[in-house]
Image 1: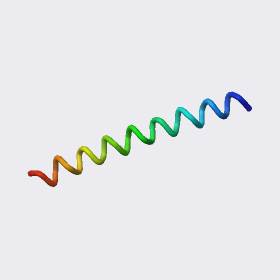
Image 2: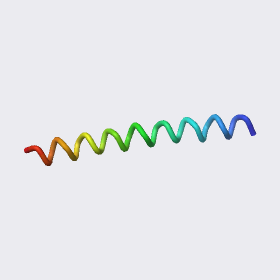
Image 3: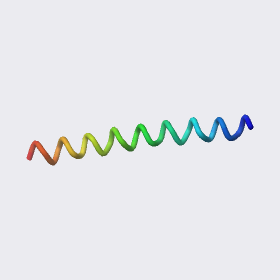
Length: 32
């Protein structure tokens, strides 16, 4: 079960990074 928790944490962190990346891209596009 510990492995699953670790994987879930990694996925959550990756999702946050991707969302931040998309938000930044959206801002860049909106500023153009």
